[in-house]
Image (tube, rainbow, N blue to C red; front, top):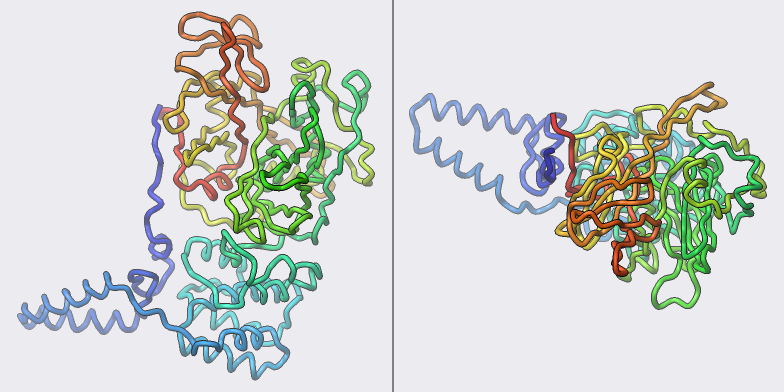
Length: 529
């Protein structure tokens, strides 16, 4: 096996895109135009050919100093930003063109963000088409990229930069998107504490709760579940003495379930685009009432941004952290609860006392395998732009990821399924990973694509062990340690001799593009060549 952090992510983002940039990128993204470089090259060549080695060396030294210097960013006049932002979305074409000319003259790259927003807004029909082409010309000049009206390409490129946005941008963006949902100006505001770049928030195609969450959905016992098929995938959650299955063909339509299990309020949040379903404890220290979550309609790096209805703070689905809004000012992280992707047959066999959601959700949806995302699951393509800093795996290869105390580690699902049991580490913590049930293959029907076949993941469980050296036992519910002692497998822990416990470490399946997008320094274990 080869283990390691993979590709370096310390390369300045603009250098990672330098093959697409006509000109030299210096420190902090200052740009030297190509025609200027040509003149410098001519001067250097003349000095070298003339034998003026002293002049040649001096000019090279000056250029080296320039490359290492902290350049002064160019800006429009202080205080002009709000007026320029408003001009860009106004109906006065002359005012738009004047604003673009002023921004270009200042070479103020903070306006790249709003100009990219306007590429998509124009295509969505929520910003006027007036001066649409001129805005793209100005965007290309500011960015040094030739991407035309390719919003996807622009957004992906921007994700690999460290560019900022002008003052007032967040509220401006909220107003720009208000035709999509009149509440968006309340979610995107300049006054809200932020732990992300608002420029990287994308509209996912639906308004707030346009994908309706399930609120304490009805459920039945396993022996009453005539609507279930043994081979279909479910999310399995056990809290305390209660277990419940959440069929993916239902969650594919709702992506979020606020529920209570074992007396504990929790939210099962499923990002279909990332292939990640995570159960979070809805209780937050310092708050009397548990949080109740909804769907914002926004994405960040193609990851679902949920919001809590108490404070209307946006939260990252993959990390459980508040990222924009009142609670983003606090050091909060939702506690993950153990959850697993399994077939209904497997889950029911392990937990015969389980309950399972019924199809009586209160919503009219075709709850069949393959709808609505079967074609996406079957494809290797992403739907929304994500800048990828690492390329060891295909973007939509499934990995199982763990993170704790600043350490993140991912394993390809195929590797874990092949090995069935793996002793490894998360940071310095010894762990054991179990994936004994194989990969779940789904055959379904999609209204647009017709018959589809796709991988829905597989069961992976991770436990913190007292020492490495665990191996499979005589049956599916038993492991043996390096001394041959028996440990019983439960959803909460491995239960060993003399009351010893190896607690479960909650993790998640996810597509590689999503995992590396939020854990760029992750350790990644790859199969041997």
